[in-house]
Amino acid sequence: MKEVYLDTYGCQMNVADSERMELLLFHSGYTRTHEKENADLILINTCSIREKAEQKIFSLFGHLKPLKEKNPDLILGLTGCLAQQEGERLLGKVPHLDLILGPDHVENIAHAVDCIRETGKPMVWNMWDERKNYSIPKLENSSLRHPGASAFVNIIKGCDKFCSFCVVPFTRGREKSREAEEIYNEIRQLVDQGAKEIILLGQNVNAYGKRGMDRPVAFHELLYDIAEIPGVERLRFTTSYPRDFTRELVLAYRDIDILMNHLHLPVQSGNDRILSDMRRGHTAQEYLDLVAMLKSETPGISLSTDIIVGYPGETEEEFQDTLDLMQQVGFSSSFMFAYSPRPGTPAALLPDSVPEPAKHERLQKTIEHQARLTETQAQCFLGKDVEVLIEGRSSKNGYEWKGRNPEYWRMLCSGPSIKVGDRVKIRVEAFSGHTLMGKVSKEEFAGAL
Ligand code: SAH
Ligand code: F3S
Image (cartoon, rainbow, N blue to C red):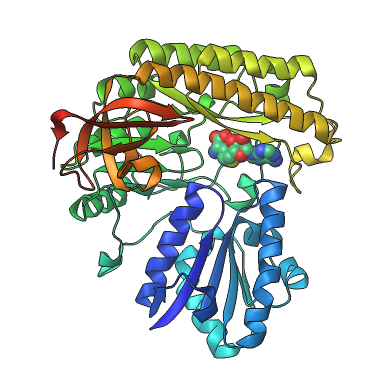
């Protein structure tokens, strides 16, 4: 068999795309290698969400050049969002590239590689897939996919929101949802292969059901139906968009036992003028009202978010509103970013007015503020028993196993006769950042499986 080396940057969608490409390539005669030097095919699945992510990738391709010179048969491919956005232009920037393939063509990866082998010519595949439906067909003999205890399942692709700063609508195209039946079948298969937790995936999962389906199903209905599939023990989804968050979805948190007590709900800013400039479609108060409703229906729900500091025109006072909102919500963790202009987005036409040192300082303050919020919550877990789904081995800090609790804190733990896929009760004895640590509480298993 030939060997493929695959590197992934960026979000969970990219991780899922890489796994799919690995599977498709396996069916086409490639096994995965972790040594670039031996590979017949090198694929870098790229991210273009921020400028830094992009720069990293260009420098990486510089390092790959000698391998290509040594082995002219090596196929070098750049996939993902940067491929979609830059397309043919990349051939000018990285002349030793053979393949440029956007996220809409993940299903064509094996075919594209075959074409390049046959013709010896570079190939650019970044036109949009114009079909109405979004399908990830089941492959015969997909036993290669060892899903682990927690598995991601794509339910929707693209984004129609066009937030002023964001390239995603340009790199991943319009929203299209997968037929519910196809999703249920994939989940059944994952459960058969050992998955206990399902994480539904999309840029904007709560827009699920609006486009691309012959038999539309609303997002909350999808959740109720998945909860009925035997063997699904935990359910999560990411990422959702505040304005599309319905009352029914809030109630689903209350009513579906296996829907875990955590929600990632990006807010970006706590200031109304900035939110409006960002075209987020809601005010800070509307976000807080939604959070209040969630907390009252599902006490103890933990919330995490995405934050951008230094958006064009953001003043110190406006930035302070973001810190205040973080405090009011009490996020358990946040992904925090300094704004960087992305080509083609409306915000990129505005002067990038907050100087870099000020952006950096705001980012630092946000990180420190979040660290305090995280610590306050971590302290509440000390001495308590929490349920952990065991996902794998860990060698860190003398704890043997790692996993997550329902609130999506990373967990390190040890105890007798634990195995992957168990749900065990752990007594929390220490924490570090967003990680809790502990030992099996007495011999209590929440359900040794
Ligand atoms: N679907 C998600 C966002 C996906 S992009 C949502 O609903 O908001 C992931 C995060 O990257 C965004 O939430 C945002 O915080 C950050 N981000 C996107 N574009 C950015 C930019 N130009 N500069 C800095 N951060 C950015
Ligand atoms: Fe980006 Fe906004 Fe969609 S942040 S992914 S355009 S919801």
